[in-house]
Image (cartoon, rainbow, N blue to C red; front, side, top):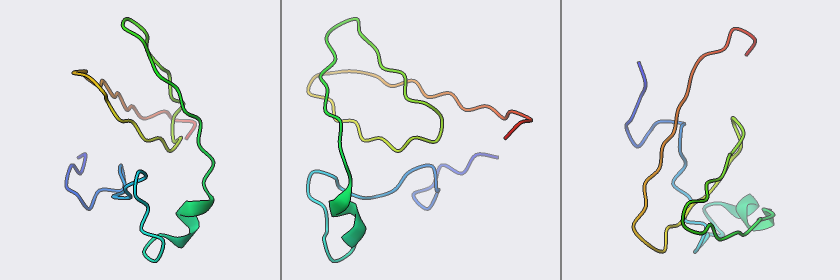
Length: 71
């Protein structure tokens, strides 16, 4: 069963707009790619890629996970 609690490893609680340098010292070394999607556009994020999304307008997110026998 999928664990949707805050303790789930599906997400981390790092605020990338305000990285806690003492709590997450390695996070300050991260490289970022910044983009802005326009209306009607979407982005594919490959499986297991870490990502951070911030919405500037009303939007919705669809995430779909499935098990593959090759994993």
